[in-house]
Image (cartoon, rainbow, N blue to C red):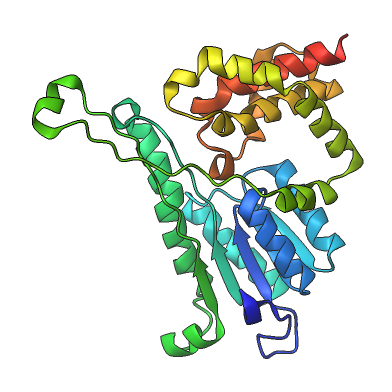
Length: 294
């Protein structure tokens, strides 16, 4: 990012206004923190209310201004409304970073039309809508001027499909695999940086999860190991449910009452499709409840 994070780089003597989609976790939240550390005004957009609140706290603690906006980037009207609000409250947008994405690691023949639709709506159309609405109609500037003073950064995700042809097709096509590289594990330093910005409550929750993680790995082996997904794909789901189970508000409820809240706070743009991971979330919740009831 380099010079783009100079708070006076927009030439107006004011902090840059930066929009980050998928800002509630992962890469998006890290990007937001980095711009905040350089004094930017950061518009945070995602579907997780709790994740946006934590990202807002990060930005403000690092010296930036934050504007969290609940947004589903697959909805063009929400994207347009968020862009309008950002400009009303912070001024013209200098940098727009498309980071939201949905990925599905699945045998191709097991994916549904709904899976493909959701991936396309978020990971392709969401980026197109960002391009459209990051360039305000009220700014009568040429494309050359826009390009020179406003930076549209597309963090292009790769959607991988692991495809196994059925045996009947193998005699003519061979055993064809489109193989994805696994998501890179965070380095020890990245883990330390993440822990450093956690609240004490979040640290305590993470410590409990790690202490009991063997039971989640056993559950993964028993229920999901043949699905072609690695344990690390399911880990956020177990952790999400576990955190809900530790929350006093959800200990005395049945899963049927907890599930809507678990779904509401599940961010598909960073955590994957809910339908794929909801059983792991439920097991994580059950284990959190059991731990607190001891």
